[in-house]
Structure formats: C-alpha cells, structure tokens
Amino acid sequence: MKLTLLLCLLLVSSGQILCPQAPAPQQATIPEPKTSIEWFSRANEEMNIRMPGAASFHMKVLFHAFPGMEYLGKGEEPRIITGEGIYEETWVASHLWRREVTFADYHAIEVESDHGRKMWASTNYEPSRLMMLLDPLLDPVPRYLVSREGQHSAIAKGWHIDHLSNEGTSMVRIARGEHAASGEFTDAFYFSPRGILLLEDRYGLTTSWSNGVTFADKIIFTRIVVSAGERTLLTADATIAAEGQADPGEFELEGGSSDAGKTLRPLRFIEVEHGPILLSADPVWPGADHSALSIYGGLDRTGKFREVELIVSVNPGADKDLRQLMEDFRESRWRPVEIDGYACQTLMYVLYVREGQQQTGSGPVPIR
Image 1 (cartoon, helix red, strand yellow):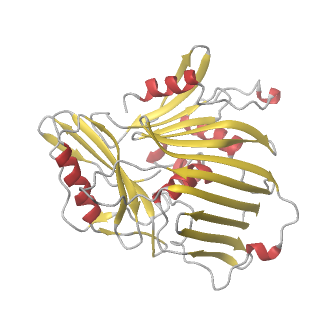
Image 2 (image 1 turned 30 degrees about the horizontal axis):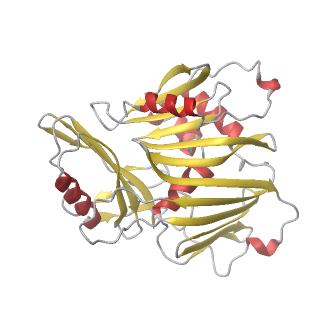
Image 3 (image 1 turned 135 degrees about the vertical axis):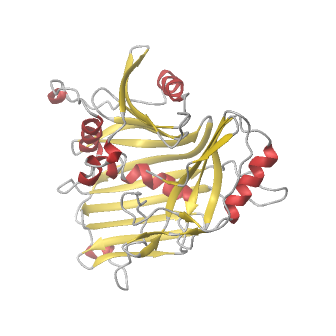
C-alpha cells in the first residue's frame, strides 16, 4: 500500500523490528548487492537453514492465531480457525525430516525419508492461519525469487530498490506495484544493510521477523508477527537447537508416498500447473470512487474459498456491500489448483481497485 514506508518506519522506531545481534565482521567488506535478485539471494544464503548440507536441528514453535474481518451475517459463527497451536520440526537433511502440527482440532504429520514423502492429517484442509505461519517460517525468502526459473522469468523484473533511514536506522526496500494500475497495492521486502530480510508487505498483509539469533552460521528469527494494518493476525515464537542422533523411526509413517498436492508446505504459483479458475458467477463489488481492497483466504482441494477475510481497504464504501462481496466469495466455486496432476491447496489474494466508474478485479493472486 502507499502507507508501506510509514508503517515500516513506525515499526523500526517502536522497536518491533530488531536487527540480528550476531557479529559478522567477515561480511563487513562484502559489497552491497546491486540488483533485486542479488538482495533476495543474499538473504536466502543468510537465513535458509534447510539448504543441502546445513546443520541438523529441532525447532518448536508456539503460535497464536487471531480473528480476522470476515463480515459475517448476524448470528453467524466465525469461519476463521483461531487459538493456540504448536509446530515442531526435526530436520536432518533435505530428504530426511519430520514436521508435526497441532492447531485447534487439526493435527498433521509430514515426513520424508528414503521411503518417500508421506503425510497424514486429521482433515483434508489446512487452516489458513497455519499456512500463514508456515509460509514465512519455511521460506522467509520466497523460493520463486531465488530459483533458477524465477531469476529468468518476468518475476525478476519491475523491482525498485530504495535506501531508507529513520533516526539512525537504515533499511533497504525492494518493491514493485502489481495487479493494480493505480499503484494502490505493492509487494515490498525490507532488508537490513547486511542483507537480512526483516519485513514483507504483500498487498497489506505484513510479516515481520525479529529477535534474531545465530544458529550454525545462519540468522534465525525466533519471533514472527503477521498483521493487517494495526490488526495482529498471528504471532509465533520459536526455539531451535542442534539435533543429536535422531531415531530413524521418527521419519516414517505407514502407507505409501503422498501425492504432490498433499503437503504442509505452502505451494507457490510458479510450482503449480495453473492458477485458480472461477467457475461460478464473478462476485461484484460496487465500491466507492477511488477505492481499493484486498481479500485473503484458503482455496481448498475441492475448489472452495475458505476462511475468507478482508485484509485492507481504502475508501471501501458501505458495509452491506462488503458483507455481500465476502459472502459471494464464501459461496463461490473454483477449479482447484493442481501440481503434477493432483489438486492442492493454496492461499490466495483477490484485489479490487475502482478509479471513478471503472473497476478492476485482479484476482485471484496465489500467495507468493
């Protein structure tokens, strides 16, 4: 949003974003990256603890999911799953790991070993707040920004680099406006001068990493906060320790390998075969002149848009129109996203912009 810079500076001045305290004198003479891809690659090298050859670890994350703005009818029960959750991960190598999560009534285990990748879950739908956590936890720097395919595609284009400072604190912002001709919505990443990713603002959904510690020469942030403006949607606190001799049975589940669409790992649009395709009537938002809004939720494996919520709005107009729009999306039907021929779940945004009498609907936009 246009308020991204103000938001970032407020966070810095209030101390909510903390640069890692780990000394790095050997990096003092490393030249500053010159392109957006170099910034993303630098951050990935500093923060990715799951690279081939990385140190084994055990991580435990305690998280709390807060309600969102659902615009439900009178007497309707909230659809967004909230409350306390626990995520644990044991990682030994790229193809030897275990993830387990308990959140409300949802419980899942995913493992990978020489016998393949397997997943068991209590339901066929992963709650959106869980995906909201795993997205920045598993890949602080989105894979598509550092992958070979991403670096040679249109994804690598259109980014602008700005150097910011506030009361002696310096940051680098890499951003681009997309999916809205008016420039209301932006995709922006904020880095420390060293090249550590501290904050992401995607269409009004802000993720911040803080409380940095050093683990096996990597920077690990032990606190993640996801918010929409002044509303906190998710907080997470992690602990990490070196993994000793792991029990081989820890990485096994009964049954055969899971299909590509059944995974806890949030899938990116560069990985799927096609984006979501709306099969029902297109929801219409009357809106007001010069207004914009972004909507977020989970598209399940059957094509239902679930846990739909408003992330941010600018001059949104009447509440009844927003309530009707949100209801239309909850009732909408889609062709599910697929990977390797299997239906998979994805998080997605839908963006609306109205300039005068002209409305632009730019969604859906699969997350990251």
